[in-house]
Amino acid sequence: MNIDVNQNVDVTVVGAGPVGLVLAAELALSGATVQVLERLAERAVAMKAGSINVPTAEALDRRGLLPAAENVQREVLERVGSFARVAGDQQPGGGQRARESRFTGHFAGMVLDAGLVDWSDADLAAHAAVDGARMVPQRELEELLADHVARLGVPVHRGVEVTALEDTGDGVLVGTTAGTVRTGWLVGCDGGRSTVRRLAGIDFPGTDPELTGHLAVADIADPEKLANGWVWSTRGAYRYGPQPGRVVTVEFGAPADLPHARHRSRGGTPMPPVTLEELQTSLRRVSGTDVTLTALRGAATRWTDNARQAATYRSGRVLLAGDAAHVHSPFGGQGLNLGVGDAMNLGWKLGAVVAGWAPEGLLDTYDAERRPLGAWVLDWTRAQIGVMRGDAKSAALREVVADLLSTRDGTTYAVKKISGVTQRIDLSGDHPLVGRYVPDLWLTDGSRLADHGHGGGFLLLDRTPDGTFARLAAAWAGRVSSVTDDHATPTGVLVRPDGVVAWASDTTDVAAVTGLETALRGWAGAPSSSPEHAPMG
Image 1 (tube, one colour):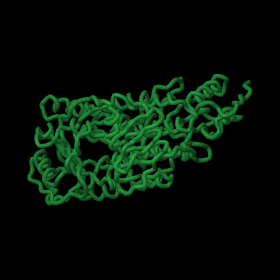
Image 2 (cartoon, helix red, strand yellow):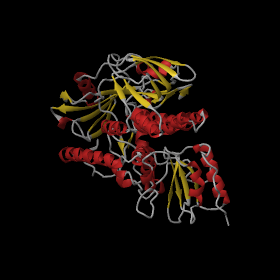
Image 3 (cartoon, helix red, strand yellow):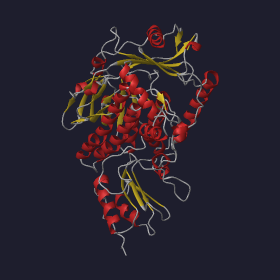
Image 4 (tube, helix red, strand yellow):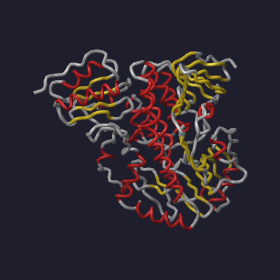
């Protein structure tokens, strides 16, 4: 094999999916030398996630990728609109539901009615700038991110498989099918069957699967036999739409002819591809029809509700992100977004350690901050499986949940959870913004704070009358970019490179200045020069 893999780099990322690409881009922005190794020779064409949540869309926004994501959504809506004009949006009980333009998602297959959502809710209203970039399928997201890392000069080596690794204490020796690589750090973003996780000896505890699902786009000879929307039966459930030919099937229990999902998730041999016959058999079983599929458009996906979380996200100089660190069913569309959040959190921290301005202990905050959210996502998906089983008790529970989701409060609650606007990290600080993803902060010049963060690094919003906060942050020049604005509240906001608010204040007093300096020293390292305190009256 003649692949020009770099033999000595700061960081090697294994896996060229969205998580690996986001991580590589963040590392490159921090100044680290980074390369991506991908086992597959060509980009995967299997249909996977169909949308992104608010934190993911805002991550794209902070790096100047929002216009590209908005273009993708417009194209997707055109495809969906074409399908809707032909098939409508029929519900299992009959009739059609008016399609709303705002993205809501679903809980256990129960589509959330956008008309019931309280869009004036403070959490939703504070993160509305990316509403036009939510319907970004994984395939298109990977293309967008591949262009992003290419512009940053990050090499992506395809057709290279990791075969061995050794943590030497000051780096990692990585055996690959293209030769041995010496790297300062190794990050596994290589999916639920992660080779990196297995070779690093990291355990992957969790719960075994109870169902098997399929996702594909197919040519259908007689689509009129399928209802548009989710339909349940004692055998399982299926969804037809919202795009032409898109079908999802869910069967309770793993068929005897399929290898057990636990074996696959722990580094077993790859599963055989989904065939047209397998998908048609599954769809006929759960729909109770003799519907005929004539062809697959691209590769189909097989999945389960296998739910596991790595015992640790870091072992020495080996780290995990995305599905390598946690797997679960795709219900609620959380997996892709959870992984991108991992990459954004880890990217700047690992970049800071490589650059030398942060101690290695900063990496411990990666596991501490991301693990609770990962555990919540696993339980959120498990809860959906609980109301989807084909037994009478689950059916009764589904009726109760459906009743709650038919209310304004219930729908708004679910949409907020699915969209990610309520996510919070436990950070020290009394201001309500601390630990939250920074909201849409509009400036008097018509820009938003996010518009000033395309190059990575920390962002400081200073609304003091005399630039008190910006003068203090000048001692961290090169790591912190200050943006001044007319006086308003909050008077100051310090945003980490991952979009999390590290400090905020509504005042300009001594306590506010002291709090900012503490946050800067805690997250942005030691100042490169002595900070100057403005005199306080």
